[in-house]
Image (cartoon, rainbow over all chains, first blue to last red; front, side, top):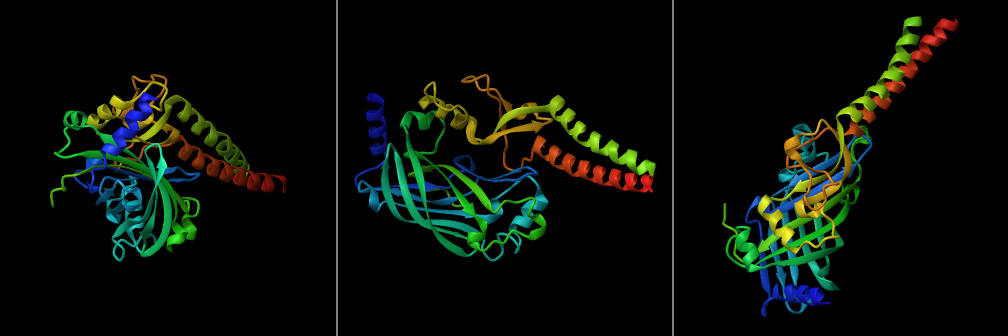
Length: 200
Length: 125
């Protein structure tokens, strides 16, 4: 019971009176985005450590918001040729649609430090509404100092969801049907801080 | 065409046998993770309670799989659970999976079967 009380207090401590904006993108180590495709040949694991955006938490949770941008060319699967294919016009078409974006429309408290976030995911120029469950955790000041976080208040935000490429106009080429699944599992773990990231 | 028959049978047997041998001798069951920086792992540990999952302390778990020829430098045996082996898959990494060996072994075996069938057909005639 004490642990639940402390956890709830920690969650509310994330939120100051006017709302707290957590900026994303201070450093690659604070962004851990994975996407995987399970196939007979192998489990393709892609990683991006690049994202920018804001998570605004308000006391009235429904007034909170999330926006996140991930550059398509930051996605790496471990094989350069495959990454090139991923960026070309047959797949994610990075030239015409350089970013994958998410903008929330509705946030609901789902209890136990989690939020149900509904918003628009835009991929390959197609926008679809999705709902994801986001878990949040405050990084206490002494923890942040020990882990050498930049100044400010910090929180960790995690979520996972599935993306069906065909829903976004990406048609898996016939010849690679044995290689790439239409459904990708996406997992996001990001640290946001109240200090603005330095512009690079 | 007896050569085709025997060659086909040889491939049919050797392909899966090789995949099995390589996987058994040089493979390791791991939980693949996309790792977090060491200071973030220390941070994650401060809130961890025994009984909670261990892999998320070290990064984002992808799933259990068998990796062939694992790099020792990327292997973590967590102090929280020494029965577990984690394997770091950082951005740009592409470890060889046993699944990949078996995929090619199956196709090679099928090719061997086809070759053996052709050889058998000609031999009978």
